[in-house]
Length: 282
Ligand code: PAF
Image (cartoon, rainbow, N blue to C red; front, side, top):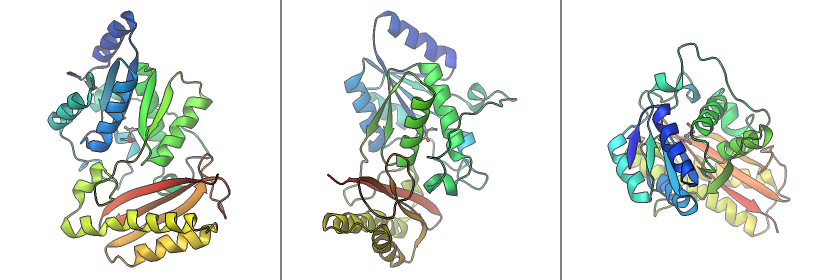
């Protein structure tokens, strides 16, 4: 397994594979990889002859008061995880390789970026769309793999791929959880022991809402109240948003009629965590 830092090295490797008629999967990441990422790499390796994993903490998707500087980084441990999961190449560029000093072109989409995390993190999805489009152009993969934990990101990427006719198949991958239910995230490493326990309120509150839907509750306000009440019982938690949206348009819905995304963002201490589930009425 190779770790390369330049766009040229990635292009050379991919073009050699293409000459052999091999298919290529891409797993875009910001590194500090965990089992959730490993599941994306494994799926990509099952479905493609070769797998490229990008490890790049993308500065332009972080707001001025966000955690860009302290975002965890560990390329050695990332390399081991990628190799064990079946990856073939890590692309780990420096900022200068991705962004020229006078970089001034961006990819963005309206609608799906407006609510949820988009409303709370202005410019975030513009940064994500831009870097992911650049990675698509650099690697030219057949398929690209994204986790359902970042449900809005997944919807946004699907939208730009459709709208801009980007020739790549987007493959969603299910949320991977710790045994106690906490969704795996590189940001979980920010939590101290007390916060780690408190963070269980995310999955617990979503489970309560899920059970209520299964029992027949269809009213969004009532379901949001179930989630909110559970979170408010946890002193270390502060709600950023609790929302129930149409799972395609991501527009908020008053009642559940077809497929909905139930999504939350919660601060545990200073750490902002997200979690969600999708529910489809048959
Ligand atoms: O989900 C992430 O880790 C990032 O948003 C992504 C898709 C790698 C773009 O920087």
